[in-house]
Amino acid sequence: MIHLDNKPLLQPPARRPLIGVSGFSVYVPPFCVPLEKWCEWTGNNWSKVSATVGRSFRILPPNGSVYTMAANAVLRLILDYEIDPSRIGFLALGTESSTDNSAGSIIVKGIVDRALRHMGMPRISRQCEVPEFKHACLGGVYAQKAAWRYVATDGSGRAAIVVSADIAEYERGSSGEQTQGAGAVAQLIEENPKLYSFDLSESASASAYRGVDFRKPHVRHLGAKLPQNALRFPDYPVFNGRYSTICYTDQALHATARLVNKLQVTPRELYNELEGAFFHRPYARLPVNVMSALYIWGLTRNDEHLRELEVLCKRAGADFDEMQKEAVSEPDLFQGALVGHVNKEVYPHSMKVVKYFRGTQKFKEVASKQMILGVEMMMEVGNIYTASLPGWIAAGLEDARGKNVDLDDKVFFALGYGSGDAAEAMLFRVQKGWQEAAARIGFQRALEGAIDLQKEEYEAIHDCLPEPCPSYTPSREFVIDHIGDTNEPDFTDTGIEYYRWVP
Image 1 (cartoon, helix red, strand yellow):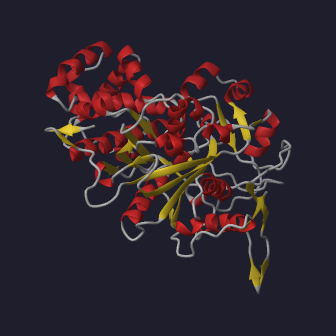
Image 2 (cartoon, one colour; image 1 turned 90 degrees about the horizontal axis):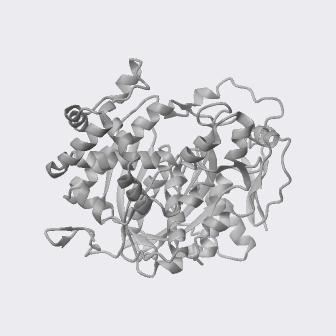
Image 3 (cartoon, helix red, strand yellow; image 1 turned 90 degrees about the vertical axis):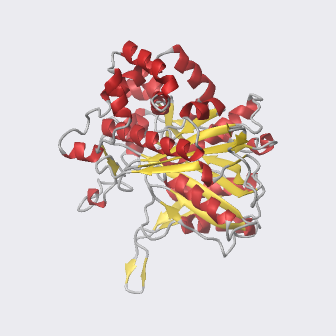
């Protein structure tokens, strides 16, 4: 419990019921690329890749899309948690992989409704709101905040579902290729939650325009022609990897600074009261780097800890005075990129300390205590953009239940991030009796049945070609049945996906 002057900070709101998450459901595609094999194919160092990125990533079959993944996760959530579809008044989709610039989560609702009817169940409420949220990897967090506001106001007594679904794909041979992935995570948000509660008064935002950080401009596709036999255009982003890492770290610091100011505590007081932390996770090493940066930044915010910081600076070969100046600076990262400093480290002394501290036994103990739950499962899925943060939380809760970890009333820190860029820092409290709802998450179950791709299969599917493709028979999931190509005066459906439920 976090206290200030003997008064608990994270108290249940007095004038409204608790609001939070009562359930998770996870869907990942069956096709899997083991990174050890990928290293053999590409000549990359497996030891380095496994330590930095993970063990494997999932890739979408030709008959799948971001909408089928989202619908699969939502339907599993409804069935596994026995949700009455008529109670659902808010269904939000967070994604940066949508392929329709008009419709959003209504597509997911429509797909799921067809399966519910097939099962003899009621459809999702006709009065359900169906927004889509987009801001790179932060869209799912924004959707979650909107769902909380819905349940807290005009949706009181009803259920909200937030589904985060994405496809991370990068050109073969690029620095991002090993950080690909695909998947969807659905969350049930309601009053009197079964898993954990959160309150937006204990969250904080930060945003700044970064220009060339990570973008998906439509001009990439203008005038482009599909390669012969290709099924669709790939969605490779425009990105600058080193610059993107700097942007993530910078925005995480600003969002966390705002959070501790709102709570009126020091960073050390906050960290000491936390059971653990979850971050947006594009690859395994990045959250660890950010956690180390947050710890070092916290030392600069309290005079009592400056001696510890000075010692760390000396050991890291960094200038103590310059490091303190960096801690209160406000560099214009985009302006730096415009004048050719896109990969220049804007916090050189601070990052020396961060890198050194990351290798110390003290930090390893912090990371092993606060960032260990669910890590093993997350090493298998790759980067799933908007779904990476809720996915890690879901994996962490399932992992904790399996290990009989006592999380009753424990407080966690969560950091969401979206390139471009913006960040959200928040706290959540695990509810008593959370184990029953955690038993239904099914993250490990979602990983089962993986089909490891061979080199030629991976390359063909990655390049959107129909062959060679391994044999796979879908079961109890949605697939694309066909894509419309009619363009007549009285009827057009060019490019519209038609979906099918496979019992």
